[in-house]
Length: 283
Ligand code: PDD
Image (cartoon, rainbow, N blue to C red; front, side, top):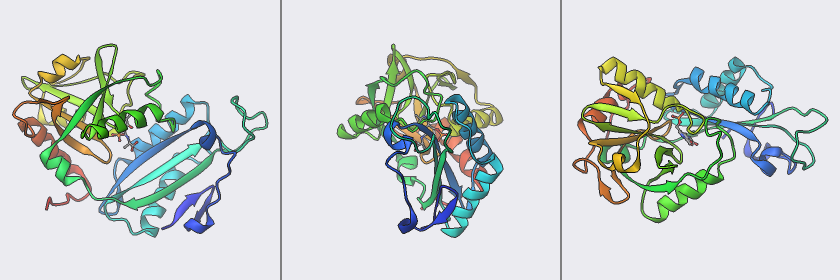
């Protein structure tokens, strides 16, 4: 597999990461996950725009332009002959002896990326998943796609340990998002999701779903809701680059709707599948 590390395409043996990399010490960096369908990057512009925005928010200047990064991603897809998979790309503030403040002598951010084959999670997409409510103890800048994911990691593990596929973050009595996804509830035909504030990541798949709601004329509102309201939703689903639109059939052991993926969720899934580079048939 070919990787991109610090300006070079290399095989695994060629990778050298410094112990002084600030990503390694502090999680001081930002990242993106971009889906590849049929050998084509999906919503690449949106992902790389968000990477640039995340970098700006943590006062990092990317060493490459957005277009150069898209070229790197395309090169990785080609070199690894990826059909259905994703690109992972991260940028750390760079290499410098350990000190919390930014390096006094400016260093160049370190860009690493790879492409990996990863099939669509069709079982979850078709059957739905269970989620567990977890208190959101993350920081107040969840809008930044930062490498610092300990809160997310702890929550996901807690969910897994109770047989759930995802954690549903609740902060101050409000449902926020998943540990690695955005979440949506549907009640009486209207789709609800948390507004894109500093407390959630404004997911690219979330934006696609909002667009699809408009196209399909499904009423959509960005509005806070409580866990109790979540349990009373007719349908519930999560979205992410890798999970696409995954129905949620149970929250904290409470069945949502009929316990099967709902009608509007399925309609959105169908519309989603139609606009990816080449719809991959479910098998
Ligand atoms: N996670 N919220 C959080 C906290 C996330 O980590 C993610 C994505 C999302 C959905 O964003 P998008 O639709 O742009 O993928 C929301 C990625 C997939 C990850 O960390 O693997």
